[in-house]
View 1 (cartoon, one colour):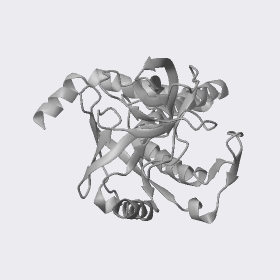
View 2: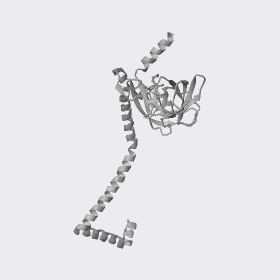
View 3: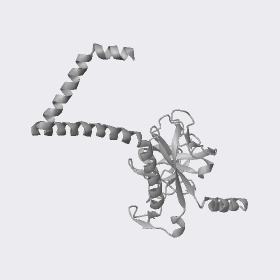
Length: 281
């Protein structure tokens, strides 16, 4: 307390100056219309700028929640859009509503990526959803842009994904919606996360650079018609009867934040029937 009193006594002239200066400004603003108007306008600018900065920081801090909301909305929209399929093989841009069975076939579970590798020989991804969220091994994983991989191992709250950037990952694809040419999308021994190969395309099939590649829908992991990439190189020799095609992937594995796990409600029925055929074959 003594030090505070000595400080006030020592600088009392400065404090009296500040007090009288503030009082003088108050009197000027209070008794003059022009100065009062200028003061109010200046105050509005200062306060407005302050609140603008505060809101900008609030928006920045809430980006995670906003991204999660958008991901949830995208999952719902993807589920609804999966009801629409090409009406025939010659009109790929036309869509129609399928029957009620296929309408309810797929669910999409949103998850956040918590770990991701892209530069290894065998790449894996970890997400923050597990058995408590309905995740099971062998489920397909996609983004809003393309294919990510398949679920490998699952715990209660986390799952690991065998990435498309894994030599053991094979996905059945078709070159476009108007062809019956099917092949296997593989990453192989590539070191570039942007490219993959479509193997086992018959030599007689004509392909064009820039043409899109889609999932075939032959497996229960991925719905039919999900775009996986564009052709960038053709006529790569694979054998006497087949050729390979190089594809630029639509999935950006470097900036992978949210993914969607595909839940096929009819997968068990399909797999059991196919297994029954094998057992009786």
